[in-house]
Each structure stands twice: as structure tokens, then as C-alpha cells.
Image (cartoon, rainbow, N blue to C red; front, side, top):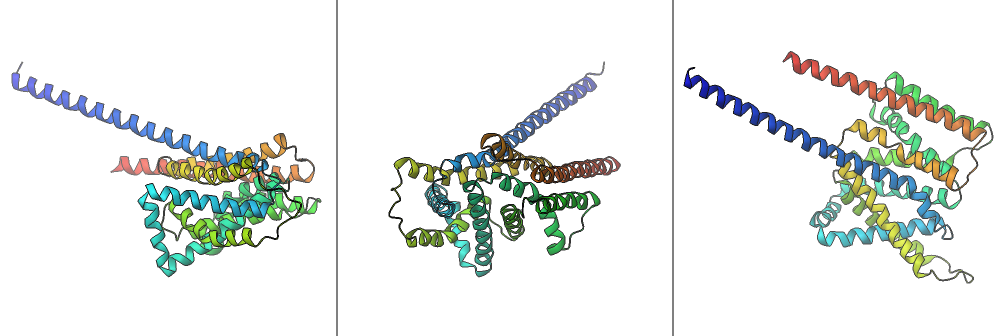
Length: 331
């Protein structure tokens, strides 16, 4: 055997083994990275899903007042975090630019409407409307893309939107009435998402600005309320629940922001239905809301639309992946 060749083969073998081990480590790291992201996404949506149960503990507080306290405590907690996070302090400097100030003023208005409608849904015993709102929100997003951005919908997307529209129409025509709360929540959040495309800050920094812009109005609302002589002062437990409500507003956003950097958009798109499904469970099973007749039929149409939307999206993603692999192999 030629010792030079043997040495060359040995060196080459070691290099290949080293490269293989490195690739294996990178693969394990990527898998761990995605697993953590998926856990964060599930955690965020589970928190959003069980939100109605938490706010139900405060059902004796008017929904508008709850919304105001949610804004105030979210903002104060974010400002407390800014002491340890310089990036949050830097975010406030964005308000010096008129264009960015206008964008965040609009997003603050939309998130205020969404929160207010959600609190009203919980306080008035209509958690199913909140669930419906978050089910149809992704479908409204794609419809808004057509109307505002001139995007083209694929056939499966039109079918999904059509099923959702029929579901809402069934509820209206069969006596359940127009689901105004659901439509307000879904529309406000869809517009919020559209405006966020123009916003450049990460979620927590953006929320700091939005709650900061809503803070004066929320504080003025609370201070200018006419005192109710028969009302009892809030107990320490109530104040604690209100403060924790601010923390629970921030926590799922932080988890979601972590997840968005680690998992695919397809995974995020599927997991977004965990929240409304849990809200449906909370409303029907845990809080005992009536679910039959027109509501059942309407939800069946909406669920069918959601299923078409998910399956169509997965098929589209699968085709895109196959095409990308074919291009890579051809090169």
C-alpha cells in the first residue's frame, strides 16, 4: 500500500467524519431550535385560548373599565421592563417621526377596539363570539389583502372565505343576529395586522408604543368616571388580578415573538387556530354558553372554511417545497 495514498485517504476520511459530525450537530441544534419555537407558539395560543377564564374572574368589573386597566397595567409593566431592556427605551424615540407616530396611533386604535370588544364579549357571557372572531380573522386577512393590496386569492382561499361568509349569514338569518362583537374583533385585528406591515418595531417594542398612546385616554376614562355610591372599593385581590392581567397581556406576545423566529410560517398558520378552539371550549364546556341551532350550523360552515384554508395552505407549501428541491437538484 502506498503510504501517501493511505495517509491521504485517512485524512480525507477524518475530514468527512468531522463534517458529518458537524452537520449532525447543526441538525440537532436546528431541531431543538424549532422544538422550542413550537412550544412557545403553543404556549402563547393556549394563554390566549384560556384568557376568557381569567377575565371571567373579574366579571363584576365593567368591560370598558377592564379594558382601561389592561392598557394601563400593560404599559406600566412594559415601562418597568424598559429599565432592564434599553431597546424598549429606544423604541419610544420612534415617536419623534410623524409618519411612524401616525402608523402606531392607528395600530393603537385598532388594538384598543379589539381588546374592548373582547372584554365586552367575556363580560356579557358571549365568549363564543370572541372565538368566532379569531376563527374568521385569518380569512379576513386574505380578503383585506385583495381589497387593499390588490393581491390575488387562490381558489381554495375564495372557497374558505365563502364558507365563513355563509356561516355568518346563517347566524343572522336563522335568528342568532349579526355577530357584531366577532366582526368588530376580526376586522380590527385584520386592519391591525395590515398596518403592522408598515411598522418596523418588534412586537414588545410596538406594544410599548401602542399602550403608551392609549394610556392617556385609559387614565382619563378612569379618572372621569362618575363614582357609584353603592359600589364597594376594589379589594386587594381585585387589584392583584388587574395587575396580573397586564402581565398576561405581555407574556403571550413575548412567547409568540420567540416562536416566530424559530418555526415556519406554515406551523404558525396552523397553530393560530389553537386559541379560538380553546375559547370555544371555554365558552361551551366551562362557562355553559348555549350552542345549538343557528350557532352550531354557522360554526360548522366557518370550521369547514378554516379546514379548506389550512389544507389548501399545506398543499401549496408542499408544492413550493418540492419545486425548490427540484431547482436545487438541477443546479
